[in-house]
Length: 589
Image (cartoon, rainbow, N blue to C red; front, top):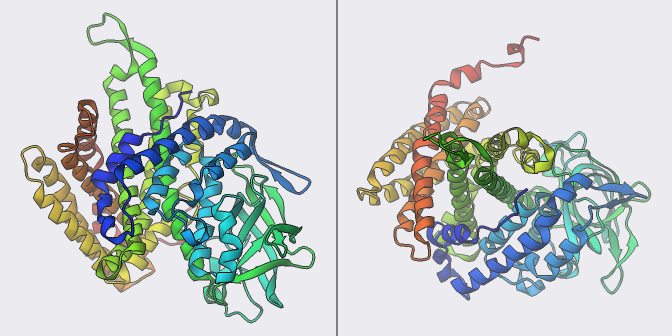
């Protein structure tokens, strides 16, 4: 089992040369110096490698358990969370008014790549806390912010999202959890399921954000409100005191992420759990989407991170494992010398490079949507909205392939749990499912994002891609820019076909959603790979080996990965009638 190494050089290259973080400089009160950025990431790498990664395999084997109504997390996790909190890592992009450091979120994204790759189960706790912090920051009253944010940003208290119920999964309109007014607070009653890190002993308090309905609330999503429900009610000094009427019923036994407790939570078995309204009554869906969009980009980052971890392990194994002879039949060689293994490794690396570039480009756009003003901000808001379902959907689909290839490179040993590589595939399998399945991401892209503005935002993105491709006409780049341009033309046609289909029937039109999301993922990935190739030529921080590696990655992507986009474009062009004609009677069993 190989040790994880934080890929700081690749991350810095993606941030500086592909995501172009200097675009943020005019909009910041104080620009982030590149030396400071490198120093922050260097320390984050040490935390990931030395503190969090070593408890990944043991946490997978031990899992979590419920004892006397409390969840007990795997050994070493509490100490790791304290190190994470004491290092100030959760407060990087937080509001300075409440103890945050006020840094752009792309820095937190780069830090979290290491945390998630080191230990996906562990990383889910701070991920949910960050989502809760953002929702409280944007929607709660000043009183609630002052009461909860300082401790959450300090890592002393953790946060959760409580959305799903037994009869209300992706269909949040069916939420039945009740909120009954009680003076200045509310009494919350109901059950929530699939609550990640719903209970644990790693922090002094857990701040649950809970969706529930008021007594006279309208039906559907228009009648949902959001509440803060702390595990421990605070005393007059703002410290955890009385235990609230909320407890864990059980933890699920899952395929992967074993060390992350996925809880069934019960609110209000006695008098009702004390909760506090976040924002306005019946306006919880807006705050919920704040949490969800934060989490969706975070899940895309998880797809990148687990892919990087699997790739590193497969590469190390391929260098060490001797099997077969060299071309001259004179000696046994490591399997990395066999062309098919080289193909699989580069299939992994080239997609990881594209995934990483997309993650950081999206992170910078997200920062612009918060720090910029005027037209720049509006464009960034639109671009962030477009990127979010692609980041979550396309990247997590790629993670399935990459983690599977890692097992394949290990051969029979990959199927043996002791090597550790199977854990990455098991852990990765949840990523296309939670925080909105990838089918929902695709529908979001084709519906809320494409159809709602009649394609204006997407056509602007396609125009930007076309403009950059036109600049890359050197002999070295032109042949590959032309390959990307071919797919771009197909994407334009597909975009119009999807708009027409949605205009004709906004329900049946979503039958094209998944291939459209995948087409756009492969195209955007190729565009950013070409941007990386252009940047490599002038980057003095990369040595000759790194430059050659990036070049191989880009060219391989354009020749071996990008052609998949043509299949999705063809599916959109010719497959509409077939999908429209499907119904529940199409399956004979």
